[in-house]
Length: 402
Image (cartoon, rainbow, N blue to C red; front, side, top):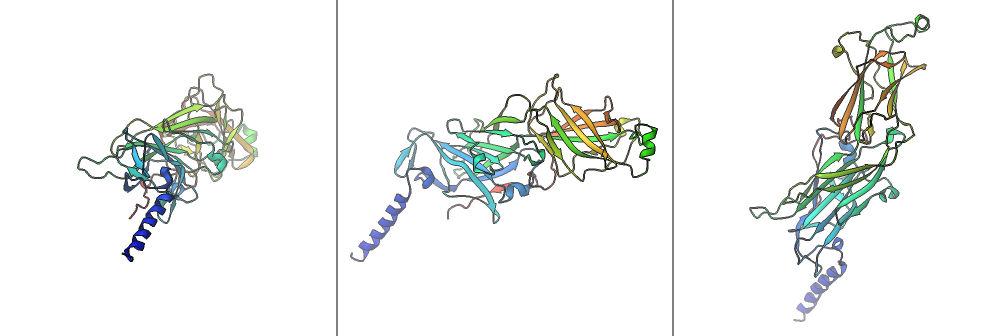
């Protein structure tokens, strides 16, 4: 007995020490009623392609954040550290999720599923760059909503693609009695609208104002124009968003992401600009009478994109987009194409391609009746740190306890 008593005491002390280390907060310990299934995340992009690259969301320099909570579904609640808890409990509070050593990780404490309880999750990419930016986000336990304000930067080259996702599910045994998948399905959606442009040109000699201009700038086979800037005027550049899962729940059932946007105040008086180099050199001045045969050129280079807030423009709107180009790379021959936005409507997650023909390159007039808008989903713009690409299914698997 003398040999066994100290051994038992050590075991009891270890148990007591373990219990003492766990506070009444769920975040600090494994509830008695929890499964041994750690909460994981499966992630995909909602659209068939996206403007954000895989390297962006899978790099340690660009994590995303998760909010999450559970709500007890019966009057008895769940047993946590010897006490029954009822109500709503936050388990992820702007938790940073990063990719390292071929796996997705987040800081302790680990979270485990509670059988039969209802869970809600909201994820946002990218993670705020500073602690001040993080303060812009707030989470409401009562309705599982994340609220934040988003404003465009005047330098549109620095605007990053914003993606959000949400899910609500009840963790239940399936019909065969097996434990369901521990993965939370997060299907990211784009908050912004993508704007693109394609231009066709009419004649090879209409770059000249008159015969004198032709003498000063004689035509040759190397004649070209090249776009270098997009300026946006009169749009709304700030909005308040709320993101939450819908009311769909079930064993492993994915719910939809509900997004509410409230544009702030009046349109900005500021000029918002996207600048770029190495854009397409346009040399084919097509004089086909049949405009359907004209060759259209992309104005914005392949690894850039114009990302703006979804919004509508009434018929009295003064908003416009101004596209700037040079003739033969000559800074003294800078021209502008003006595209009014009245009557237009942009939706989140959509790409709007404005196609038009320039009837007179020198005076930069859009040919009457040539402007049309193609509406599509976001498209991949190449690997940069501004976007995520849907080239693979990103699976966030966290180490489960052994």
